[in-house]
Image (cartoon, rainbow, N blue to C red; front, side, top):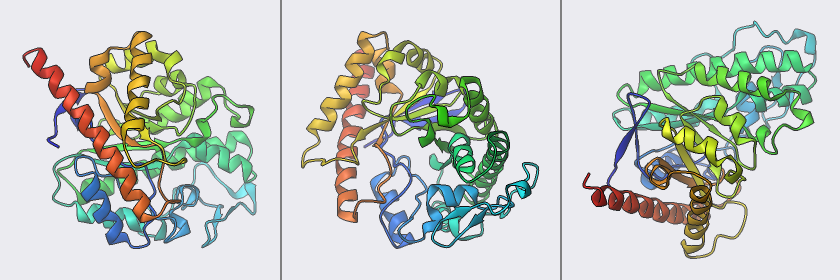
Length: 344
């Protein structure tokens, strides 16, 4: 598939319809995992995590690593022995990302040193980290202060490592926010303004140096997510976005992109990609009927599995990306047809 790029903002480029991945893979060998990513998603490869190889590469252990006063056991268990010793102002440890939770990230970045096309990075978002710290024993005020500072620091550290290792590639940094599934639930301990403030602060930490994105793996209040200001919205097909069609269209008109989680990872996939394509097409039809521009929906689209693949085996992961690649090619072909039809 040939890459077609359109601008986001004033400078950054993304390849239309590019397949990319979401977080974890099932591999137990880092070099094999990176080879898989580069082979299956060459236009926009994503730095993977391998929680089966090392539990410290799970979302939460990786996110809390380096927070003073928070303990992480080798199996990934997180605990806070003394909540009063967790200081929001304390610097985040391991600033060069040299420890075990970041080993696969380092292997990936070394493998793409000479790359000039974009790469995708993904880390746990501040809302999800804050909810985790509340559950571990911190008060909400302290938990979200710690989470906000830690995620901003980690995002800048990861971007600095990417810039040093892959100097010619532009990064897309996506913040993973499973805590936002279900909208503004009581256990979030944050209202709408609080969610926007915490999430927009993380995006702002790397804004101007990287494209930014937010991934939510289920139904959410998409208006709140978009008000935080990402360049890319990553969501599953069928995750209740149709009622937010007007907001989504404004986002697209401003140059935003959507990474459509169009290939299910939590149900039988079947042998052929036709069902996934029908579901994506149906989603787009609903959005168009509710006011979205059909050209922008296609021209500013990426395609992904719905979530990470750590719970699958490698053969299943290959099949998921067979389908993902097929959908990406169909999107690319539709966009090329649109360009030809208008004489572009």
